[in-house]
Image 1 (tube, rainbow, N blue to C red):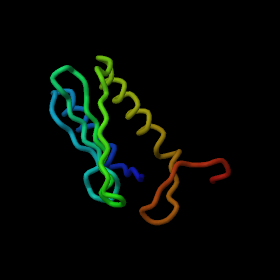
Image 2: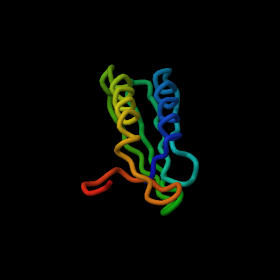
Image 3: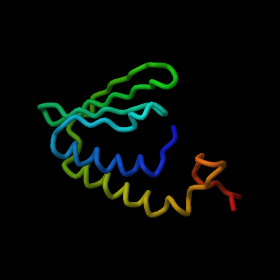
Image 4: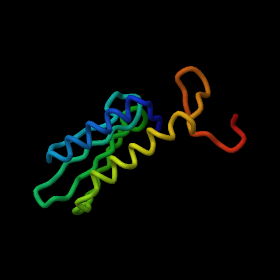
Length: 105
């Protein structure tokens, strides 16, 4: 799976949508597996991952009652990724990126 900087922006939008109690879909560009997160009436979440580009398989799992601070925790993690992304990600070829490994310059 490949994440681009614009995917991080979209994740922030997904968090806002989830916070409002609505269905959110992330990474639905068709280049990677997509994820749909659907809140249910009990406060839990149903997470579906659809691998459209490769296998066409969809897997759905319930996440029961995430902690109230979950969205805030996700925002903090997103802020951390944004902070380290420029120095911890290397471009391997035009438009292709990966996390820095030991020995990368």
